[in-house]
Length: 498
Image (cartoon, rainbow, N blue to C red; front, side):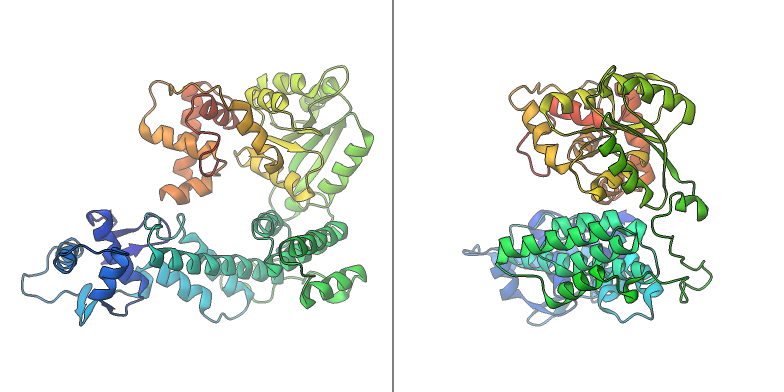
């Protein structure tokens, strides 16, 4: 049984083994037939689309040769005169024959477009659909117009799947876990009103009415700046409903349509610290260190409103922070980089030098290059501005505990500029090509999950390889891999994804 994968680098597999499909243009023949969804593609169309402008004189015989070699790769045990069963002749051209479940893009589209029986089933199917993605669709054929068109269509369906998953989760009362994903989704696609609707509703149900209204203000600004339009009727009604705290916006109770054999989904009470512990998962213990009482109060409000996070202590300077870390043993420390008596950077170095230290996230009002560089060299697990949206701060905390490093998008450009013009192209000795590829992906801000999707390997394998790299290079945290990558020229300031 042959399976085809187009939601990422194009490939075909048989019994788990990747098949040799030949060169890129030969692969493009198979990819074009896959895009046709089982329908026949005339040979003349294949020629025009594979060689836009001026096809070679022998284009027909070249296509026939490609098809012959692809058939041998796809069905190596087929008898010489036996009709092909996968890449078949369909006058005046060819077609691909495969079950929907054996072509990831077909399977994905079927899951997204099919009617579902309730939010629990929808949530499960959207999770299954999104898990099929390993990277940009039809990667490797971007220069061909038909591939660009199909990749754009599939990506639009992917965005729809993200929103259908979030909508189903909110209907089941699963509010808190969706907020970081929805914040990222709305920020990346600011003209999608459904993204803003879901984000505002999730924030409201998490007891964050002000942030919900703030999300709608950002949506209005984006639409006005880009299109000269105001919010659509749906978002305008939602804004009014939030202002009057309409009852129909409240989170549902225990889900009545949980998946067969699975636990019912229960909404965590909005604004309840320690909600993670109540659901059987230990809450993350967070310590805040900042010399400004107003900042500490604001962070306390944010943490108290997020299920699964507990504020376990407040410090006014670096010395108090070190003492509190030793006494309360937090999971994460949110540390101001400049404080009296002992500044946050010096305190972070001492905290991280201890045995089994917590994760440390640095905060600052000004994301200067010097502060950013020094913080990353110290081994911190994040660098955020105090003016960041609450969702960004929460995302930084969760990313740190998950083993990732989150740099606020507002200061990422400072990191790139900090290393411009002083790169040493010599890579560290003893690293394989796969090690260097992994470092580059980490430096570009990819999480373990995104790296796993890109490389088509298990997420745990990525986590193990990152840990091994850190140990082998004598680094404290993956954030220091970012520094190494820029210092050694593994990632250029202007490279894609940086």
